[in-house]
Image 1 (cartoon, helix red, strand yellow):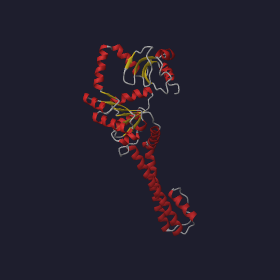
Image 2 (tube, helix red, strand yellow):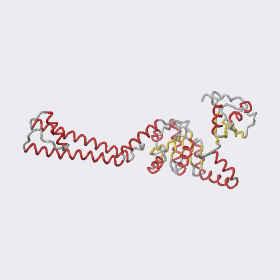
Image 3 (spheres, one colour):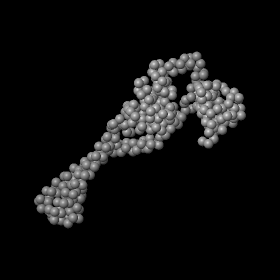
Image 4 (spheres, one colour):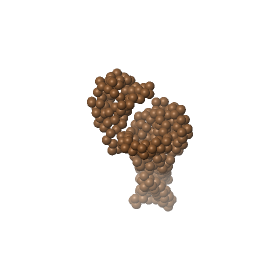
Length: 350
């Protein structure tokens, strides 16, 4: 895949070099044919057709007899013509064989397929950094069927991502050109999982400049970096060390709760899922109704665990008298079928 930092991957460079060599070989062969034809026509005084025919059978060494008798000068020229033809044709055969053996044409086909995938990307996520955290995020996105692009500067990391079937872009993520090639303007969100706090902050600021509506989730290694990322406007700043410590403590104190939460938040073989739905006055017919009147639980089977108001107020375990308001964020739990029915009730036009 193409690199955006001013250089191309080795496979593409090799393909370009081979194309240049093949063009050179074809050009040399055409020049040899022209020289041979002109010699036999002007020096030997043969008609154009016989001159071209003699040149072709000489270069291809098919072993046919001479079109017309040749003197010593003509035979010496024919010997030279044979040598030039063998060298030029042999050069092209060598390059074609090398190309097929090393799979450069296949790489170019993969490049074109990848370009089409990139051009079709919309409402996707950018995973910046394909280390241990980035790989785990990619696995979860793949399990959820979420479109995403992996971006990393390491050739090994990109090869690993492609081997796993991910759309991957090699380049310097701190450059705007890289973000634009990954279609950040059309992206839904960005995961900054680089090992450096400074790079994560820089990437978040660049992405928000190019796409003000993008959701940004960034990794922070220290408490100070966590605060700086939050001040920079990152949607969610997460410290693997702080979060990991809290999870370990929770697993020690409330292991069954942690197992249940893990089971509904991630993984391929889940029975229950947690999902969020934002209510819009123009799209949701339930806005302005109480939960009892909307009867979402009975009609869909999904459980509304909590409601977050537009002003940030969190209502846990809402009652039937709770009024649904524009901008509310519903946190719901249920099976995939229950959540699908709930989505149809909340967004019938979609």
